[in-house]
Length: 584
Ligand code: AMP
Image (cartoon, rainbow, N blue to C red; front, top):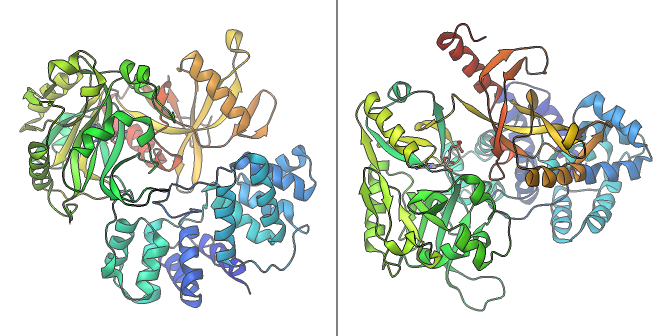
């Protein structure tokens, strides 16, 4: 059997068991039986990705496009395909069902063929050219292979296989310690390359590479200052800036089309996208640092020493070219709060206390030609007068002030002060913790304004009423339940008219099924919602419904993989039963 056939069969077996050990065993056996090249490409696919994590490449071929291709190949009508889709609620499985006897029973596709086809699809521009290539690929595939092609292409594998299990399977397949596999994968951001090193027993050669973004360390929410103190006592406290998380890489790089490497800066978002072009004025100040660095921080919009609302900053996102006027209207600043790599040394394994000391040294040593000065006045970032005059040339990189709190009362005071400065709340970090890329643990805690907010993904939309009759303004949204998305609420848009108009356009282009007055859409738009309480309810498939949900804002900086889970909803529900027994 050819490679893609074997991969699909293995994926079926993995999805067919709920036991983690069994999943790992099946995958290890599959990997071991393949050539290293086929196994490496498979490892990427079975982590639910078309391309390695660090790469910027994307297919730019969503569910709507795949739907079109399936229609073409099967000759089925929208209504017929919709019926199949509704039976399964999963596009991959629907493809399998719909293709049935239409697809060839045998195929010669190897996993590396598919990897090559994905590169070609990513490289061509425009839906027409992409559709042609995708159709060619699907015409070669068996129904079962098509099922997994769709799942990989939409990033919704849904076989209960997290990247950490793929790492374990690699360890088992090639008889290497799983801690080494995990570390190599974290450093390289490429599970395929990690597999190749594991197979050659050369995992110790994995080196961090500048300009390959690492995973971001994430924070767990806490509801009160008292709860924060349950986890650790030696707490570093920072303002929670309401901006865009960004990893700054500074060092030598041979840019495409250039003969020689030169010192460069790249800013990567949480989704590991390169967002440098949206913030050109941050490049020069970051280049001022004489050493090679990876910094972790937040891009904030700043004026008169205060953070501007996130909606201001959002105007800068997603723009390829940023005009001088934009830069003046929404001045930005990079607030660094961590260091992951400096002067050839990884800093990840050092405790936060030492990383902070490194940051102090880095900022003290920078040849600050922009002459910003940071003074820590009760945690307030104070800039030179030049910055107060909104001269964007003078905005730069600054170091987030670090405060200490030794009691919940003290923390409450700091929280009020942070909100007084226009910031969202506090980040509370364990001084003794290492930097854990891509993990959400209890070493970093976030204390925010709302009782709680949830990050959710829009699953369906409805035409509005009255003055909103012409726009898709009512959104139903979901959280994650393992591999599934389960709806938890519906809200009328709290967005601006302009945002609603843009969203309407997006939803029209990314409709999976059109039911007339409502549409199922690509689950890709992440929202942050606030609410008054969580109720038990049969209205949604999650068994919960949010009371008075309000859309706070769009979160284009987050991907559907980052949204909250049903466990978190349950946690809030349980906690509020104690705090507000009459509320539910
Ligand atoms: P949330 O996006 O609500 O999950 O909160 C976590 C986010 O807060 C991080 O991903 C950062 O973008 C942001 N943040 C703001 N200030 C800080 C800080 N001082 N330390 C860490 N993260 C921060």
